[in-house]
Image 1 (cartoon, rainbow, N blue to C red):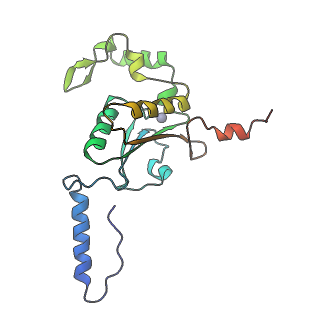
Image 2: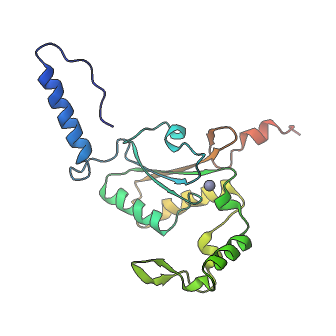
Image 3: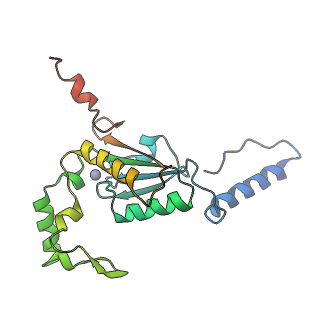
Length: 204
Ligand SMILES: [Zn+2]
């Protein structure tokens, strides 16, 4: 993010102006100049309106590229974006943010498939996934797999971390971590570490 400026000394106002012009130029032509994001970070998060992604991660404008979709799922287009940024934009870290009470993840498969079948008025297997690639369709019977619902957010988060870590299009040097954002407490937890559940359970 462009720097904040202190008041210039007398006779040096032009220096402050030049500094601002340089900074603005770096910001506006960042990609062309090959300047990475400030934290060299890609965030993959659910599109849910309750997740304050930047605030939860302690980052700000300019720090990261943020990819949001239903569920914060690692889909083909997430891989495409991650492969581009890690191979060409000096991104060295990926953070996945899933969350509790995620409607995109927890709705029953059948209900979602039925709803989308109705929307496609017929067989969704033939619906084109990408207008530029009409031959790319969901395919026979894999509709439920494509929406990829799950009922354990911690498990799903962990699986996505491993998938990204092992993906051949993402350099091995890239660090991948994931967290579950708790909408009820406005805090992040590492997948599988349900602290609230543990403190409220009697030790046997
Ligand atoms: Zn969600």
